[in-house]
Amino acid sequence: MKSKSSKTAWIVFGIIVAVVIFVLIISSALKQPITSNGLALIRLDGPISLSSQESFFERASPTRSIMQQLDEADKNQNVKAILLEINSPGGTVIASKELANKVKSLEKPVIALIEEVGASGAYWVASSADKIVADSLSITGSIGVTGSYLEFSNLFEKYGVTYQEVKGGKYKEIGSPFKDLTPEEQRVLQNKINLIHERFLEEVANNRNLETEQIAKISTGEFFLGEEAINLGLVDILGGENEAIETAKQLTGLEELEIVDYTPQPTFFESLFGLSSYYVGRGIGAELTSLRLENSLEIIA
Image (cartoon, rainbow, N blue to C red):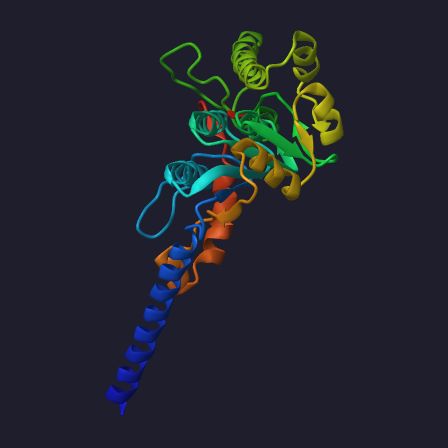
């Protein structure tokens, strides 16, 4: 009786595995456009980060996955243009820069569609596209850099806890949460932040061909709604997906384009064992991790 139950369980398990494999194969096949006039839809959703690495059990961080999707779409002869749908507040400096450079390197036209928010590092990415479409109330801009860290020195003092440091290098402990910044350390960090901000501003200004007056207005780190952004040269067209598709048609000279969703399918183990919920929770923590220069210092674009 026990042997029969065990055999039944293995049969059921085998059927489940077969169904999952079948679904994955079909899903992969559906990614290819039916016609030769494909418009690849790629989503940038959430904070931009290079954290985590791909393995047999989990896919890479969303940013690396997006870069892979962009490469695949650019090499696909049936894809004529790429629609990059953005809903992101920004993220780490290096991840934002790498993704922006990837967009800029593509041979096919790229239309960035800013939905609710495409700010800071996410706007850096959008600025690398051929055209930017945004709703009149979308949040854009925020072309600035922040550096922050937790500091517990006063708390330690309250409870009589002391912090002793032994270091090699004058600024090795800069940004440590266990001590106050000295005026000199504050100056050093501010200079780093200013340098990153200058590079960020230069990239956006070059990508968008902005005039000196426009650069001065956006350099404050202020965010702009779509209807403000279009007057500052940060957005080309006000609208949504329909306007983005029409823009793609104009850039390609085609009357019809078929949307091809490049959203990655769940990995085999995610589908088989239902790990999606686990990775959602795990991903929130990973995506909120920003670039760490040293100790607890975080720098975000």
